[in-house]
Each structure stands twice: as structure tokens, then as C-alpha cells.
Length: 313
Image (cartoon, rainbow, N blue to C red; front, side, top):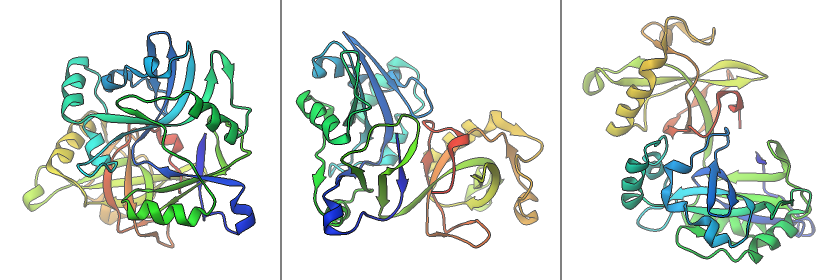
């Protein structure tokens, strides 16, 4: 179940109908748990269990025969705050040995916020308040796992607290909302401190000067009304390691023609086109009148998301 971007619920009486959770800057994963077994599945139905060996202890921490849980995988900085940049090194890893070494250097935590099934009994038709109670009753307490609190009352207070702690924002959830798999619902509302947007990479412009031979700027697209359209370019926010990873990921996707027809001539003149398969994320200031991202900065690739899902926030 996915949240809809929107304003905070307002009005003191209505506030009591909502709970507010912190929004964690990581990757979403649903955990399928059986005796001694764990499968972690991303938003685009990829099994990512191998990438995070430090989470193998979840079945023992849950202590039931079977369960399906929902949560966010995060890597934290020295101050204990989720850092999406750190998490980038843990994604895409399919080699168990390499994943184990990375787990020692950059460990992750799995922050759980919902329960979808216990011992074979589906809980998705239960209201959010009851599901949260069931999750609390599981009493999951172990290294790399936590059930962060959900706050009753004033969502504005929780949003302010998230900003003070350097977090991404909050998610407000109606106490009576059922869990609707695969759907974006107004019963869950996400409010961020910065505007972020998922994007599809459709090509790049070669770099110049210090970036000669590297990616100078990525050309981006977003699905508007079901059609992939050009959404601008991003040339900032790249570390040297990021540029190396991008070059490696983009090289096998090169094609002769662009995936969209509305790229301006200035950007298409020297562009190298790729198949629209890679999804990334940018932070930006606003949308322009012609549906271009204003002042975007690159945050990283999102292998947990699919191009067809990339729509304007």
C-alpha cells in the first residue's frame, strides 16, 4: 500500500482520526517469514534478501511460525539518521560474500510499521489501529530491527519534530484504514520537507572539463497521463562513485533513438540515449509550467521501483 502526497490533516477533531509515523529515507520491503526462512521483496517484486544478510535474524526476532510484515530498510549516519546515500552501496548486491562485507561496513536496519498476516491469517482487512496493535504485540526487539512509534494527536507537531531530527517527513494514516496492496490511497498521506520525484533515465549528455568522459547530465522522463514525457535534466548531486556506477549501469542500455519525442533540440544534440529502464530519484524546487523539474539534484538510483510507476508526486 502506498501513500499519496498531500497536506497534513487539519482540524483538531479530525486529527484524532489519524496516526502519524516518521517517514524513513530508505527502501520499502515486505518480509515473508516462515520457520527459519525469510524473503525480503521490494516494491517492484524483486527478492532482495541476499543484499541484506544482517536481517536474516528476523524470523527468530518475530517468534511466530509465519508472518508477513511491511517496513523500510535504512542505513544510518553517525548521528543515527537515515542516509539514502549510504544505502546506495547496499542496493544491487547479488553476491552473498560481497553483501556480508558491506554489512560489516554499512549495516542496515529494518523499521517495521505494518503486519499483513500472522500464522497464515490475513490482517489486511483489519483497521490500521488494530494492525499496529498486533505489530506491537509481536514484541520485535533485536539488533537491526525496530518498530518505531506512531503518534496520535497533532500531525503538525510530529512534522516539526521530524524536521528537527533531520528526517524526510511524516506519513499520516487514518486509524480506520484497511491495507490495500499495490494501491496508492488517500487514507495514507505523506508530507515531506523537500520535494522529491522519481524519474526514468532516458539518456545522458557527455560531461566537459573535469567530467569529460563521464556523465555530464542525465536526461529524465516521467509518466504524465500514462505517457512517458521529457521532464528535464539533472547535472548536480553526483559523487565520483555515483558517476562510476551510472556509467556501468547505462552502458548496456544504449540505443540509437530516444524513448520520448519531446526532448528539446538543445538537449538532444549531443545526447546518448538509453532504454528507459533505470529509475532514480531527485530533489527539486518546483515544476515549471511546461512540466520540467526546476533545480533538480540527483539522490540516487531506485532499483526497488519500476519505470511504469514513475508519475508526478
